[in-house]
Structures are given as C-alpha cells and as structure tokens.
Image (cartoon, rainbow, N blue to C red):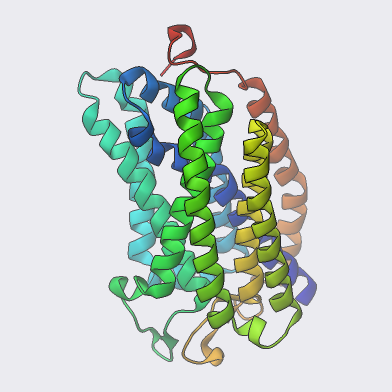
Length: 340
C-alpha cells in the first residue's frame, strides 16, 4: 500500500510540474505581449506563437486535478474547499484568457481583448504561485479545518511565490517567442529576454533565501526529501545560469529547453520539500493532510497506475508530435504566417 501511495505522490507532483513547464510559456507570452508589441501585427505574431498550443497545455491542469480527486480524494475535498476562492479565480482567469485568444481576431475592438489576455495570464500565474507557495510553506489548519481566508493566503510566502512564478513564466514565454518569431520583432524580444533573465535570477534568489530554508520542515530535519529539495533547487539555479550562456551564444531553442528544465527543477524542489504532505499545517503536524492519510484504496491506486502507465506516455507522445508538426516560424511582417 505504501509503495503505491508514494508512487502517486510522485505522479501527482509530476503532473503539476508538467503543467507549470508547458502552460507556463504561453501564460508568459500572454503577459509579455502588450509590453513587447508596438503594433497589431506583432501582437498577432505573439498569439500565433501560442495559439496552437495553449489549450493542449492545459490538459495537464485537468489531469492533475483529476489525479488529485482519484488518488487523494480527501486532499481534493480539502483543497477545493479551503482554497476554493483562489482556485475559482484561477479558472476564471484561464477562461478569460482563452476566450480572448479566440475572439480578438473576430472584432474591431482589439484593445479590450489585449487587456483581458494580459490580465488572465497574469492573475492565473500569480494565483497558481500563491496557492502552491502556501501549500509548500504550510497553511493554518487546525481541529476545525482551515482557519484562514482569502487574504490570509496573501502572506509573505504566497506573495513571494506568486511574484516569482509570474516572473519565471514571463521569462519562459519570452524565450518561446524568441524561438518561434522571426524578423525585426525578434530583436525586441531578445532584449526583453536578456532583461528578464536578471529579474528571474533576483526572484529565484529571494525565493531560495526566504522560503525553503526558513519554512521547509523536511530540510530542517535533514530528511532525504529535504536534501532532495536542496538538490533540485541547486539544479534549477544551474539551469538558469545555463540559459544565459545559451542565450548569449545565440542558441535560442536550447535556451528555451533549459528554461523548461529550470521550471521543472524549481517546482520539483517545492514538491520534494513538502513530501509526504499534500496540505501541510503550519500550526501542528498532526493536522497535515498527507499521501498516507488521504489516499484511495489499494485497488484504486493499482488500477490508476495501470491506466497512467498506458495513457500518460500517449499524451506525451501526442504533444511532442503536435509541437513538431506546428514548428513553423512566424514573422509579423509576413501576413501568410499569421492565422489568428
């Protein structure tokens, strides 16, 4: 039983990490669009760079939510009850962004949709970071359940992680745009990407100084997961340094892949640091919701493991195929490359 509980904690973490790394770049591109674009053709180029991919990337969000419900039903109930408002606002932000992508090209009034694309991307990124910042640091859970409120989630850990993830996504999105877009517009994106690298380093440094070392109980206990957390964060820092080197040498796609790896390691550090807790209490560990006290039955976990073994590789293979199929360049000066 314990093996499958640990396995599904790992798979649960992997699904959320996959969502961070994939949807992160199109959320980042949505935020970057308005401050890197000076005309409608450039904005259309940004939308075309993420248009074929954003909805497929959100499959990982649906899968992560479904896996939480099936593997850890108690944690799902608590999470969507105690964090109902921020998760609801997250979904609203994603809906607004998706609708704006589709409707922007079908109306003459594009300014309002540009604002909605930015707002939806920004709030989705920030709320996602704030939610997991609280989960990684612990939330006030006592005998009566969650003792905080919406404003209680906007604490130091939540705000720091929310801002950090927003910056990480924006940098990730700029690197994706740098890979996809050609022409004079590419030079503007390149200059913004170089600037955002320094902002990303600053945010990562703040995050690593203030959150894991001061809040992570596993690190303080010298446990295996605590040291694994340190390893992942160290690898995330190395990956981020490598992004800069690749960017300076003109290896654009490599810099995007390294940014992808950076986000994977950064998020993996957070999940390793909170193991085996799904919803840790910062009041008393006895109120922690863990992979062991909230999991489904052994039979359910075995069935889910078999299903995951079959379908997760299929989804990954399909997404890789889609990315290769639609790996054409976009030039805002060439209308034939702009379809949205």
